[in-house]
Image (cartoon, rainbow, N blue to C red; front, side, top):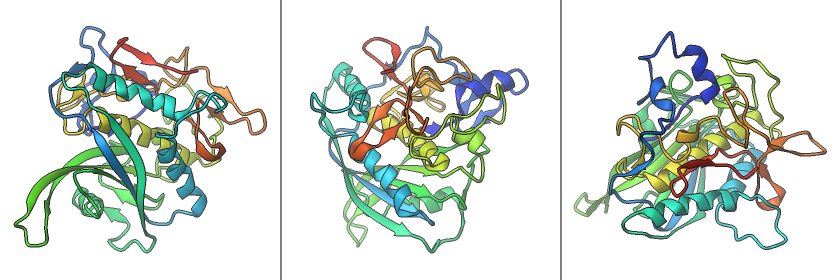
Amino acid sequence: MATTTFPLHLLFVILFSILHASFATRKLTELLPDSSDLMKYHNGPLLSGNISVNLIWYGNFNPTQKSIISDFITSLSVSTSATSPKPSVATWWKTTENYHTKSNNPTTLSLSLAKQTSDPTYSIGKSLTNDQLVKLASNHASENTVNIVLTAEDVTVTGFCSSRCGTLKSSYKVNGHDNKGKKYRFVYIWVGNSVTQCPGQCAWPFHQPIYGPQGAPLVAPNNDVGVDGMVINLASLLAATATNPFGNGYYQGDASAPLEAASACQGVYGKGAYPGYPGDLLVDGTTGASFNAYGTNGRKYLVPSLFDPLTSTCSTFV
């Protein structure tokens, strides 16, 4: 299943020394798109219908940080008028519809922000395992939800920084308290705030990378390096959720280490991108912040380029 890995610009520095190393389920060599093996549909279900997105805040997040991410989720489904700022997050998200269009069984998908729960007291500690992530994600889970676990900057998670910045997974749950109900599969996402642990790996281009060209980092659009980095990783994983929720939808390469809608365009945010350079972006004239999409409530975001299955290219809006 999907795991957000480190940006493409880091790979060229380390490929020759660790070609067989693995970042979670993805090998470094498999992060480089191969034009001879483009995105393929593997006949599995895509995320469809009216889906509720639940946010699970684990650890200490302030109200501003919460609003940055909740506004991003809301921005995915906001209808844009002729007077709305463009390009928008909603326009970016529409690229995922092309996967439904091209599938053998085209369906529709609508996301809406639903419940938000907070655990500021770190009820199960500050060092989480994969099993604990599943436990957190199972709260309010159903067949028609995507639960997103967001961990604060002082929470460590198995594999965080050493192999991943976030993960898309699925698990099973029984509908009923007596374990005799219907067993169903739900998808969930985990993303961590990397600002104190590994911003050079999981918050680029808002922080200097630990490897590769050391150009000045970009100014984060919401003035929060950690949370703006979380938005990038969350956006990538949401796109994978829509197009490959259970590992048998759209992906490129090996099923155990797939390239998906966003990871197939790793490190690309605007036109002219190349390793170490995210591309030509919009810049806020007042703050100097770089972004490529407008959201609700006056928000600005940097979102990853998505692979468009209709054109077989990485779609950029700026």
